[in-house]
Image (cartoon, rainbow, N blue to C red; front, side):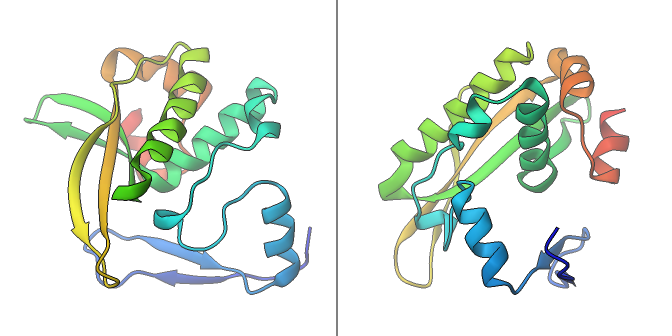
Length: 165
């Protein structure tokens, strides 16, 4: 669409491969900002699901949630027997209410697809370089809703897709 090639980086600090793609383009930044993408440090920024997604078709909503889970979600097994799909986000402790509101928007879309999720809960705390404290919030999808998650959302991420299958 913009005829710009991104730069792919592998995070060498991690055992499990994690990648990021960087586009250096004011045109793309302006486009994404106009579409409701938050700019800057997401931990210290209040944001919500853009209206055009929240009121969009099921395909638009499903694609948005898939993108979130491909990037910020995980699928894991606890105690060697209980599978979960988790969603995590760090937020400045002063902005916890906005993070919980955002989580509730995500959970509402999941409910539209008949996907049940746990209530959000704090998981970790982190003191940042600037001295502020951020809290990692999490909620999970239980295995009883995996079928609906697979049918309506799914993963593009190949490792997560295989785990879900």
